[in-house]
Image 1: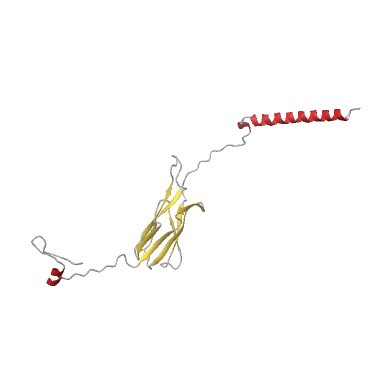
Image 2: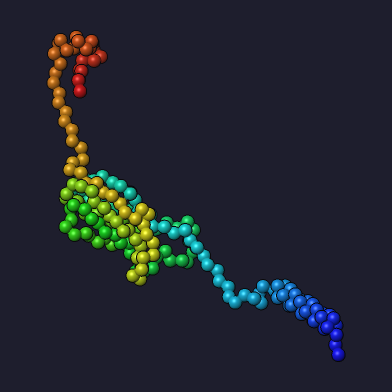
Length: 186
């Protein structure tokens, strides 16, 4: 017959041996070279690309055409990487009082939008500016909309001129001599 105290000693010894084996297996797994545990490896290259749009705001007289420039910015693109897919386009929507319905605009990348002459004064917006390829939006413009303020006339001015009377010349202390014989009051 086995005594109870002997049974306890045997179970504690077996438990201690199991702990030692488990610790050794864990230490072996942690010290294994990383190449044995890697399932796959890939390099992912990130580029800081952006679709720049300018100017963000402009004032244009009515019946005068203008442009909104768009160009792709990339700090360092390695040689051999094409800048755009062949089907890439920059698209936008032009809205404003000159149009009953919005006008869809499309240009090749790095080409400005040619805005037609806007016939009605007021605020027009080129919005939702984006680079599209394969039916998917790749980049949004920065800014993603441009405001065009159409005004009636570029500059309204009036100039009047009249000769000064002798009294006005004396009142303003204007002295004429051989070096200055013309005077104007604007």
